[in-house]
Image (cartoon, rainbow, N blue to C red; front, side, top):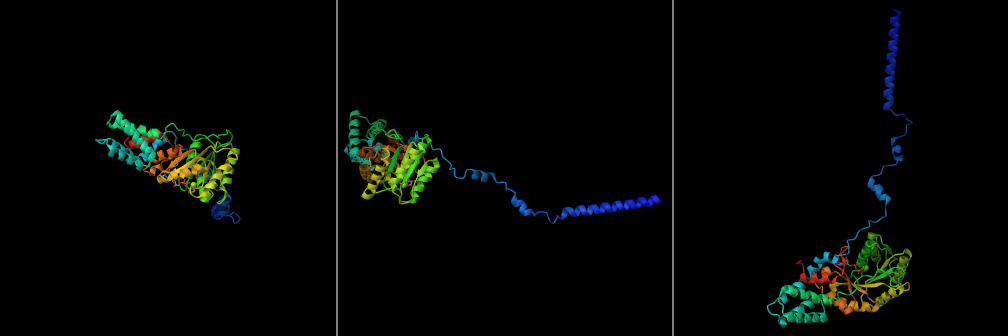
Length: 380
Ligand SMILES: Nc1nc2c(ncn2[C@@H]2O[C@H](COP(=O)(O)OP(=O)(O)OP(=O)(O)O)[C@@H](O)[C@H]2O)c(=O)[nH]1
Ligand SMILES: [Mg+2]
């Protein structure tokens, strides 16, 4: 009996102990100790895991996405439709006239008229018509394909296919970078051409520096910087109103120090009849030449300005010896004949043509492809 009591008491003690233990365990979990650190600060102290994009952006904050320009070879052929679209009238018009039943004086007058309307210019129009007339007579041909061939060969001849149209990318002195100076009236496409030429040169593995010698507006230097950033080319600039000649000098100096192959100098647009501004341009060139000769002076002409462009070309040629013409906006001009006129009257080759606003819409001028586009239009 005694034993039974002992067992009962022991069982009660164990049961009470178990109940007390369970109660404490439950309370311990649900009620955090007062001194436990609050959750908020703990979370703040921990480094935040970053989203992968954010981490990548931080790793390369200023690296511009360097672009790869389209190949230069065959650009004129690629862009031919733009040229042909605007010049369809010339080729089609001429061929239609040549296919007339009777090739009399009136028809030849119309051929002349068509060429003049396309801005070919008086002297070359007369020369082309005379030669064409002569050859048609001698050959006695009325075959459209032969006439097309004759027309092409005459236009090719006046475009002087043997002229050297390469852009100099080596210094004439054999030392330091080749300096390419971009000149022209306002809005002709100088800055765009600097940017596009830089793309081509960088794609060819050349080290290019650009000089923002258009200090009229801060936006001009920014525009050039944008082009430079796209291909990773350094741009030398100074504040608005700085002396353009000294910016050009600094750019050439920086190019020489960096071992650059080419320094492209962008200048402000100026009207050829503003003598003060033309003098300033002459000074830019002279100051550059303190470090070595300029390899190339490119006159950038807007093809849509037609014959007016010829007057500009003449004056620019007198102030800075122009070595090549860049004819921009040929995509927007129905007067492709300006190529013939400008080249003949200046005695300077058209080296590059602009056929759109895109970064790679600048093509080396090729006489064959140009004449094909002019005469054949969009037919092929
Ligand atoms: N359609 C077409 N637009 C062009 C071509 N070349 C340049 N442009 C446009 O012409 C405008 C003027 O070009 P810019 O390069 O700023 O001309 P700019 O000679 O530097 O002008 P300024 O510095 O103000 O004298 C821009 O809107 C260009 O995109 C071209 O070949 N075709
Ligand atoms: Mg400009």
